[in-house]
Amino acid sequence: MLGQIRMKSNSLTTISAISIIILGFLCVFLLSNFLEEVHPPIPESYADEDLSLQGEKLKGYSFGAEGLLADWYWMRSLQYIGKKLVNTQQNLNLENLNPLNPRLLYPLLDNATTLDPRFMAAYSYGAMVLPAIDKKQAIALIEKGIKNNPDQWRLYQHLGYIYWKSKDYPKAAETYKEGVKIAGSPPFMKSMAAKMTNEGGERETAREIYQQMYNEAQDSKTKESAELRLFELESLDDRDAITASLQASKSATGRCPKTLKEIFPLLLKAKLPNGRQFRLDKKDNVIDPTDAPYLIDPEKCEAKLELTKTKIPQL
Amino acid sequence: MLSNIFSIARNTFREAVRDRVLYNLVVFVLLITASAVFLGELTAGQEARTIVDLGLSAMLLFGVFIAIFVGVGLVSKEIEKRTLYTVFSKPIGRSEFIIGKYLGLCLTILVNVIVMGVGVSLALLYVEGGSLAATIWGTIVLIFLELAILIAVAIVFSTFSSPALSALLTFLVFIIGNFSSSLRDFAENLGSEFAKVFFAAIYYLLPNLSHYGFITNAAHGDFPPASLILGGFLYAICYSSVLLAISILIFNRRNLK
Image (cartoon, rainbow over the protein chains, first blue to last red):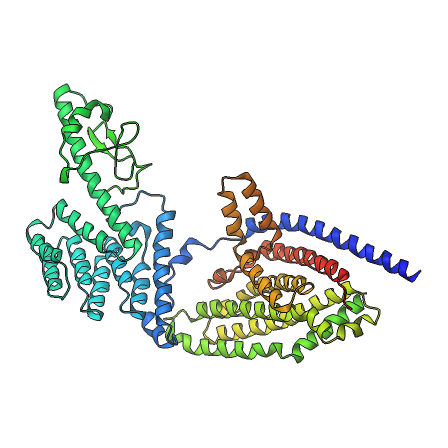
């Protein structure tokens, strides 16, 4: 009798438990969706709060983990800019990133390099991105790097680059010359020092600078930025040559061609720097270095980028 | 039945206090006091915000450790010490035992969280973060609800697994639970229909602890919306009930001889 009652009670418990599990999961399913909807997202502006911790003071309290903290600030700086680039709706201009309001990049990199003064990747990244935000901050970061690492010729290369971006060619030449004095500096530093004075503003100089940056970059972000700049220069050469061909055709026929295929023979004759030829896709469209086809601006009769497909920023 | 459950809950709480579980509060108070004193120098006028970030994160972390390390031992310790047989010699059912243990540990965590909350509030008052001292309490409620789910997870594992493995599994659930939203986003971006269903099933089966994440907002003085607190409360009740039902099913079938 007692056994029967116990068995009955056990099966009742089992049925109740299974019912609770099924009903519970049903409620969990509904509530989970409801909570997803009502949970407020972290406001965008919170990401731009001023840094609450200062690297210099943090240094004394890091219990020997300065390197780790520096890594953390470095990663945060990459994510900070990365997020802004991903979320931006507007067409990116590499020359001016201020519309993204990236005002925390300098403090983040400053903290990273204060905690680890030999953090070369942080200096390189700063030299590549900061000139498009605030040239003074970019110079301050690299000068700090030179002060902490006087034997690093790469920092002189970076500083020379920033002065070159600021069109201060004499200062850029002077900086490259300073870099040449450092043991182990490569020959291109010397040629850069000479070129800056006479050919500072030329596209070929820019190409050489970015090619060196691409070759010497120690982190992928700097390499990617340098590569994008090289693509941009290549595309400028392409567009100049296409526009010249379009104008020649317009002069001959009195109208602007509707497609680039119409001026194919002219494009084949066009001369691109370094003996390069136009890139074509499978449908014989002339494409830019990021594989997006070039378009024609019918009003100006000029070549233009296919903004919805290209990765090249419009200047 | 209820009196049995409450007796076990009371005893579980007493035992936790006897085991010096609440000693973590001393460490917490020291941490917060030190933060309140030193952060002024470190944070350039952002002490209040940093105290909220640090205090609430520490509260969650301490709570997670208590939930895991006490929770996984609730059943196995009773078996090891053979006190379970004394309990079951009285008219107490296994389901009452599990529910009582769960409520007892919830009470321990609740006391812990309240004392920690008072500590953070006092530290905020010290650094003149008056309004934050009040608004953090909404987030503290969410932290407690998250911990209540985690206790239930620890109890499920403790009914059939060794304490070490249970602790590891519970900790993994805590980590996955905080990333489960990403799991669903990941599933939505997958091409295969099977993968979508599979990851969506995991998303709903595992506890979504990211519902309770509000610490960053709290540091800005935000109070969680009432719908979030209420929804979170119902979710915690439903999910914990499911887990406790599973625990009871397993424990009922366990041979304790």
